[in-house]
Image (tube, rainbow, N blue to C red):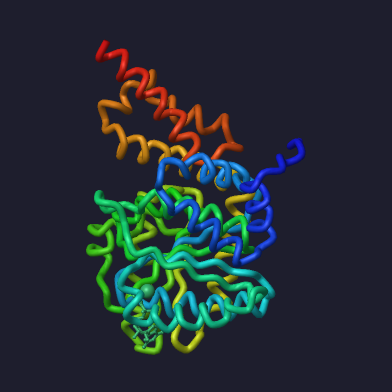
Length: 331
Ligand SMILES: Nc1nc2c(ncn2[C@@H]2O[C@H](COP(=O)(O)OP(=O)(O)O)[C@@H](O)[C@H]2O)c(=O)[nH]1
Ligand SMILES: [Mg+2]
């Protein structure tokens, strides 16, 4: 049981975000993007207030530039609107500003100008210096999850570079180009390990798509998966012609049900939150600082026990501990 929410501006804003008010969501996203120190506490209060209040699916869409991720999202949005679901999309791919993504962005901005349209797009240009997703990406997705029935994050990423997106989503879709590689190349690139669903796009191009799908299926037989209990679906379709979209939506639902019934969903969320806290601490204090915490599992345990605090709050709390320890080292 949670007690009545306190009556302060952050909780009022959090409540409006949770109702799906798009103006409030934009305001909240700007607030967490404002990194002046005097604003920090308000941003943390806002993120704490929405933490754990939504179980909306968080879906990652990755793949090489040009694979059709933005076009696919456009088609998914159409399918989900028919099903009356509200949708938030976070686009971390800077190149999507220029190609098909620009169309997507314009359309979304157009439709979301009506406050109740139920579709919202936010573009984030930057990744952090280390090449991973920035801290703000996870926090933005947390806010959007509170506002919508389902949220997507589009990132350019293949194989190992997907590691960051894994920490912020429940289900990962990999959009493959036809003729983009054979089994050996997929294995070398490490793209078989993480995604929960593979969508071979541009099936209108014919045989190449069928071959790519066969190579992916063969690769998945070889094991080496993060979650050995779930066999990913390999689907074919055309984002441009809206083919295979219903099947993809079904596959997303099915994976979400698997996460729920197996308990993997909770496990993923907790380990993702812990990984985000660890990455933040690593960026701020480096390995030396992180090792000032008492044991290797301290971050995991701490995060697991505090399921009502935001990732950002937990990182600040543990950061304070590290600073105290570092101070002791100096003294
Ligand atoms: N032939 C074909 N082209 C597609 C399909 N889906 C997307 N495209 C095109 O592929 C290009 C890249 O698409 P985009 O969605 O921007 O890819 P992203 O970089 O992965 O987001 C654009 O020119 C799209 O029109 C498809 O199903 N078939
Ligand atoms: Mg794109």
